[in-house]
Length: 517
Image 1 (spheres, rainbow, N blue to C red):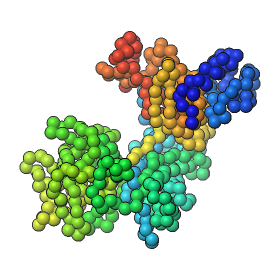
Image 2: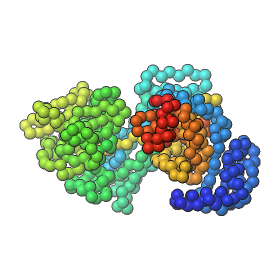
Image 3: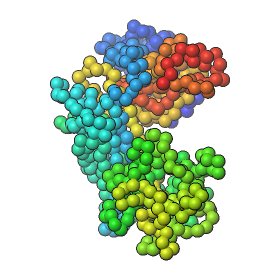
Image 4: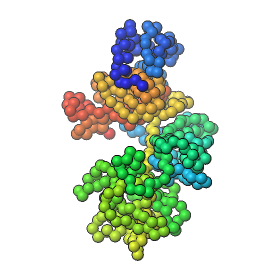
């Protein structure tokens, strides 16, 4: 692996090679790529690029520079990009993979399932346009944000077997049971290594006539053998993955004797409800006496609040309590010395004066209510919740070139983890980068250098060209969205180019001519 210093040294060597960079910046040339052996490839339009002297480049590092003129080949105009940045909803495709962060191994003839059924959600008006590209001339109908056009299905795979088919059935979401059996060494007891095992879910999305749309990969999931019985210590590195951290997302499930199916807490707009079909990732945050959020690990008897990350709706503060017992469950008293652990049962006690006897409970009509849950020293099962860390991996993309009858996503969707600037160069670190990708700063395409599948770079664009970009401005900074374009498809990276008030001249220049989102 080559460090940042090696890359900078590589640039210095290339800059001395008879105008190498000058040729790459030539606006009348298309793109070219050079390999370690000096072999030169032809441009995208079949024109041979200028010959250059062979350059010594490490065989593991491939350099491709794409110029701004290549963006015009797929007719992504600045106006089209600007409209998308201002109002992405009607044209954007959003796919979210929701799952638990841990799963439990199976033993012998056990057949376990994910504590949270993996869910794939499709949102945005772009799926409607995708189906129109799929079968031209057919009229598609989308009734509401919770209904999805037909013609799309998926296959979800955990790396074992053929995978499970996902049917949306007129809705904008689909779930998988994902059985975990012991016949595979990853999930069974035959695993020789004692080290923790991780895996990813892969969602393959297809059109009704089996044409591939794209492959999407979830966050990592940890396989654990058993729920820890002993008291956990956060000093143990293995235990850190099992405890709950303030600000992280969790999901809550409740199973009562009166209902055969498990019900989950679901955020429905501005209130929480129970649902046997859907579950939501909720932020769990520590709250101090003044109502401010705090960082750190969540311990039993801490005061927390549950927050919907999509709407910002918060539940009133409650105290998280430890629950023990199977048939006769009780709230365990004690200090806040033990961290809250994955897949354990807990209860939420209201802290408001006069409501200390009330607990958060699942009602018979799927309502989330305040309930006097303790009778004869026992806690009602309607107030007992199983807590599990959850993850929502979101992919956002937009078909910018409407003149193309067929759009092909890259084999694996690009993901950007980090953006940083050094020596007037913007670095994007992530996964699944391709030499055909171009970085856009706001509505401005910039010359992009492909250094590796995990690294893209570009020079800082002319600030005058960014003044008309849609951006978010507040008292502290101005933020411009960074996107990736690939053959007429734009991917939202979730990263922004930020100009702080410390850069006074730049900030004032942007703030005067900005379109506030």
